[in-house]
Amino acid sequence: MVKLTIMPKITINDLLKKKAEGSKITMLTAYDYPFAQIVDEAGIDAILVGDSLAMVVQGLENTLPVTMDEMLYHTKMVSRAVKNAMVIGDMPFMSYQVSVEEAVRNAGRFLKEAGAAAVKMEGGSEVAEHIRAMTRSEIPVMAHIGLTPQAIHRMGGYKVQGKTEDAQKKLIEEAHTVEDAGAFALILEAIPMELAKKITEELSIPTIGIGAGPYCDGQVLVIHDVLGLFERFIPKFVKRYTNLKEQALHAIKIYKEEVEKGIFPSDKESFK
Image (tube, rainbow, N blue to C red):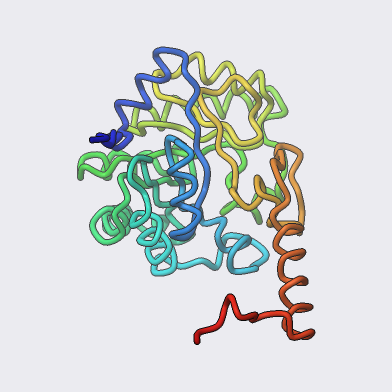
């Protein structure tokens, strides 16, 4: 009789252990049941249900319009599919900025209603008190500094951060601030790789890079970018591993042709 080996869920301790051992952490986004299932089966450590779904799923110009209810809806689908990976829900714009109390309440909904194991929140010192309050409420928080897409209007677009000496010093300070506040990991987005290296070496918590070079403790990308399903723009830090759009387009065109020519359905696809 063949015994099935059931892998335990990835936890914060597993991520901390990976950093300590020098093993890389793998992370991808997912927004629905089928893709979450595939990502989980591939052995990815963590799945971020990112507010990037506003752009790659909903077709919006930026991440700002996506709502808490929409984020919870997608996180539920992902949690339903996942057996091993850590599921992290992304706090959308205006779900935590108004007050610490509201931030804790919304973060708790990701765990209580949507099955996530943690939340991610953009910002540094301005959200330190939010992180402290969440961790006191047993809500694990992944922090996110550098390019923070919810601040697109203040930053003047999707631009590399930390290019000047003062900006680098500020990002290093922000990294220590969120760690001291209780964040269990930190996303570094669109910053110079040597700066990411310095931050990674100074922190005891794992750093996850996206456009931050090879020295972070792990990497995250948007799954639609990895699979060639998003074409509006392709950031420099993205590597496409396949082109599912081309494959899907080819298959659908064949289906259309077969229907029009009466080839499908054949006897094989029909009941007698």
